[in-house]
Image (cartoon, rainbow, N blue to C red):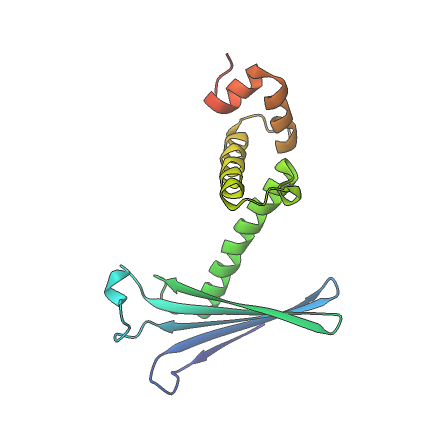
Length: 167
């Protein structure tokens, strides 16, 4: 990993850059994080309270000689620090990925055959709501899958999940 702080680009805007390269599970992943101070001349700047920086995360993955990539853009209230920006970006996606994993393991979400967009969005919202309720249940010995099943089998347990107290 290496971090590079550029003084400024050719337009006089201060730029910070941070790069990582990881090799694991038969693939090479490169990430480049670039963060700039928001220019005073940016149209609409006043509409974003606390806006300090703009960021770009460029990710490439090489597996078996094939390379894929993605670019994500961010607006932020963080001061310019590309290494901290990289950590925040990775942290956001780790939360997102763990939520997706929990939904897939608990509700088999990836196996859903629903194709109607409205219905799919509604079911996704309901699954997230139910996941939140199941996670709040105090029994730490039961898995989320077991809690979901118990809520379907027992109205007493369902009541505990929904209202926090048994009936």
